[in-house]
Length: 419
Length: 164
Image (cartoon, rainbow over all chains, first blue to last red; front, top):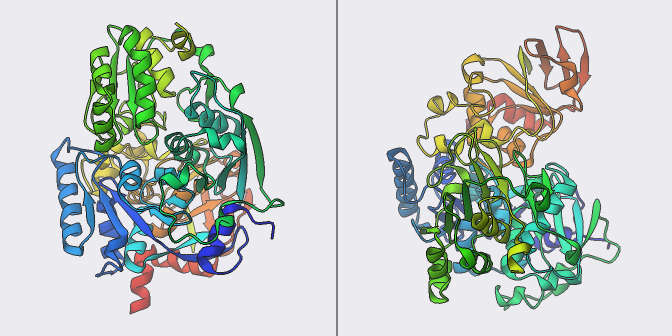
């Protein structure tokens, strides 16, 4: 058949084979929006002339972006979201519960092969669970609320084969940044990125989420990991009949193929002001850092803070550096409290807050001053992203971020791990 | 559908954060207010200079980044009649069609325009002309369904026109 994984997912959804480029209409299993895009989706719903949500049980709202609200404008937009949710019987995750791309997999029953859309570009994170997930705008979200369906162009696909395992100090963030650096910010536009190879087995679910989270930064429509023994611990496979859907045919036609040996990768950063401006950390070592942010939907999970705490607890955050640590959900926060990681972070001098998107997009918390430099574990370093167009953002792994907080300059984490 | 207007030339990878910084969309849902900040982090003076009917010519990957539909809506609200770029980011392209902001891909289009030129764009016939220099470039015309959405001024208006 020569089908890629995404072709197979569309085939099993539609009951017929599809080709890349074909326009199809598919049923949506779950759709979520947040306080940044939900209020406009409600306006769009009304503009479309819709008056009834097709199936409220498949819609979720999450208040995570400006959370808790930093100003009355945001408060009123959130009131609008709450009122609509109440009126239509839509489940809403409230302030403090966490970031949508973390809260949804923690609380909702995910099934491999599901079709999920979110009114947020980082909805692609959920491809880690062997399903099709992509970001949409508010009008498309309103259409899903209206009809339960959405049109898609079946994407071409890129195969990324992984071999081996990471060396200490290198994380899945370094892998995805390396890929984006190689492919470019628009090198995978409209493609499905399909991760394969024996190296996949060395990546935890959290690491896979980090990788899928950032496929949109090279223009991709979705990213997807194969269904294996790690996935099945996180998804409901009770109604799964055909596991072959999650493997491409041996002779599947890929628009592009890349291969990485994980043990050959080194810590990297994305330098200002584009995510594909990727450089080895060693090239930027010594650059003074004012603020470090560890968190976001990209790197706000247990393993991220465990790695960071190990590095931070050696010498603590350097005087003069602000280090902000934000778990991606309340559940992550509680787990980190139980295993003593929060204690280590606070003792090291980090400012630890409740779960929010906060600093990542410059809405509130940690807005940079003019001329300041931040190292962030988030996903975008665009000019002004952290609230100030006169500042600079370097994207990095939690290990590199923590090492840079300890030294006050961009630092290769392998130096501190060895100490 | 023929559009004629003054041209603003922008670069490659114009992202949704510079089109409309997130901090503003968490203050108000009023697009007249948001339009005052369009392209602010790219050029703080641009919002005040763009007038109704102006045309944006840009490089690769216009609209990369966030799914915020605010980006398409705010450019439309600012008065821009059409964006012609070498390529667009996926979600921005889709959002723009939905809100009735024509977006057209033409390879290397940014090489043939400079700020202040007058452009003429025919969406049906599929051409982009620089009236100032006389150069004419071909574009793919929209499929008839998308053309109907554009004539109506977006998906919502198109839906309403069907109900009448």
